[in-house]
Structures are given as C-alpha cells and as structure tokens.
Image 1 (cartoon, one colour):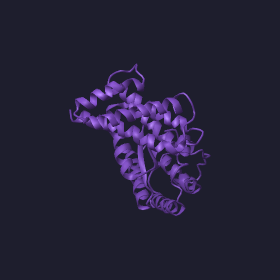
Image 2: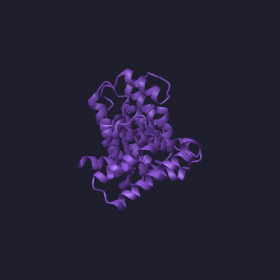
Image 3: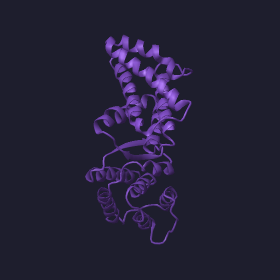
Image 4: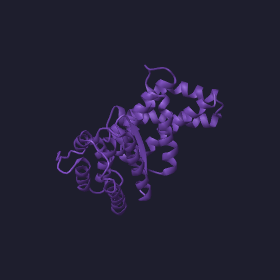
Length: 266
C-alpha cells in the first residue's frame, strides 16, 4: 500500500485518544530500550521518505528515527510506526519482531484492528464487527491466495473502504464489484464476462453442491440485486452512499466465502 494512501486510510477509526496514547507509549518505550541495536542509514532514509520527514542524520539512524516518531500523535503515530516496521529492510528478524510487537501493543491498548499484508508490508486498518470481519473479511482474504488477481482487487477494495468519503463512496462500491467480478472470472474460468452474466453459473454451482432451493433462491436474488445496485449506483453513476458500504463489503465477502467453501467440499 502506498504510504500516502495508508495515511488517508487511518481517517476512519483509531480515534480513541487514551488508547492511542497507551499504544504510543509502549512503542516508544520499546524503541528506547533497544537503542543499541543496528539500524541502517538506508532504512532510516526509506523511513523518512515514507512519512515525509526531512532527513536529519545527527545522532544516529535509530535515535533520529525515534525523534521523528515522537513528533506524531494518535493515529498518525500508528501510521509512522507501521512505516518504521515496513522500511526496516536490512535486518529481517528485527523487522518481524517490530511488526509482532505493534500487533501486541494494539491488543494491549484495546485497539481493534485487522491486518492486511501486501508487497509493501503489513498495514493495520480499523476493524468493524469482529465476528463478521474475521469470517467474511479477514479469513476470506486469506483464502484468496489461490486467486491472486482477486486478492489484489479485494486488497484495493478494503483500503478504499477504510478511507471512504461521501465523494468516493461510489468508487469504493465499484472496487467491491470488481473484486466479485474478478473472483467469478477466476473461479469459473471466464475472463471475458461481466459480473451480471454469471447468474447461471452461480445457480448451477449451488445446485450441484446440494444447496437447498430455498437458499439458492435467496443467493441468486441477492446476486441479482447486488449487480443491479452496482450498475445503478457505482459502475455507471456516482450515487452510492457511505452508509451502505459495510453491507456491500460483507455481502461481497459472503458470496466469495460461500463459493469457496462449497468448492472445498466437492
């Protein structure tokens, strides 16, 4: 994830000042207790670039990085701390150590979150309802390793969701539409078809896997309404609202999860 995108993504959630202060204190105490370990100048420069800080090599790479971190507050400190961990490239064991510590301190501070990992490293985003996020978002995202194109689309959708505004809501909805479309294209081996043209494939797949007609009818009707909404509010217009995006996210995850689960039982 681009670090400018990530900073914007923290605009929703992580706004409990007391909890964020607790998290920040733990992180800074950890860094200051380990000021004697090696932190390369190259990593320090990468970190400065990631957080838009002026390179100022005066007392040593780690000390100077800590000084920069101390200049951030609240969710922006989290943004900077994630950047620090992800740009810690020259000592892999320590990079993993700091990532694990960040997660531990978030848990200690009761800051509920989900983790996204991509080619740029780990990114911590606000969590919604834990049970839904675990089953319909996080776990489904992990299952998509078998479908890398879909996983890439879903990663983009989740990041866009976290930074949604009234002006961008339609784009976020369309990201989820594209995610589901790509999944159907990958799963049913039909790269040239649009989402709404997979209705028959969905029905056949559900029937062949013994899904009762009542449930099939619900899923097919939901699929029809989902594609109709996307065409009317997101794909061709900009009428989507922020207040429906959570439903769209979970509906997308539920559809993908159901199909993959049925496939595992074949």
